[in-house]
Length: 205
Image (tube, rainbow, N blue to C red; front, side):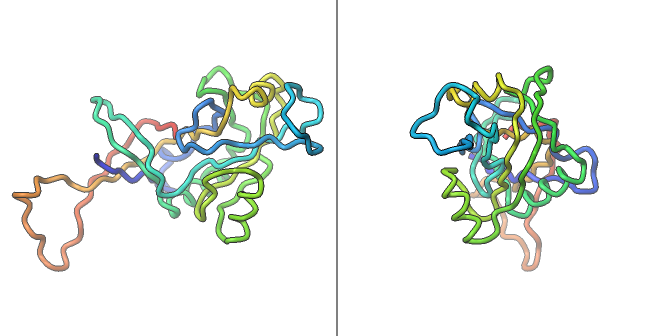
């Protein structure tokens, strides 16, 4: 199956994050945690006693994400640590920290805002994220924490209906040219590998 690199251009306003969505099935398969004001042995279906803070991973580097093209062709996409850092930087530069919706519904923006954001860049931060109960916290991943003041949305989190973050993002995609192995000529020495670039309208990852 074709493997495609997703990236953005920091100087191109046509690429970058559109919003962060709280969803039931995050494509990166890492669930967030809801922090309690005090430790509790189990989750109760009520807002009282919780800080209403959701923390988790927005993007994980080099993780294959199943995608489907406009003509139905299947492929897997991934982000490099470098592309994730560019995406994080542009997200903050464009002041998108309160752009949060539910299940990618454009009419369902909620009262929520970012309170913490960092790239996991050391064993200490990796251990800290793991200690929070968040899976997939490898170096290069983007950690985020949101204060969610919309009580109905937070109750859906506590009930297990909403489980993670999904990033709506305009990206460029890069893929190696595919030629049949039996007729593919050996490239001359020093010739760079050939890549193609295509602009995607939007991806939800």
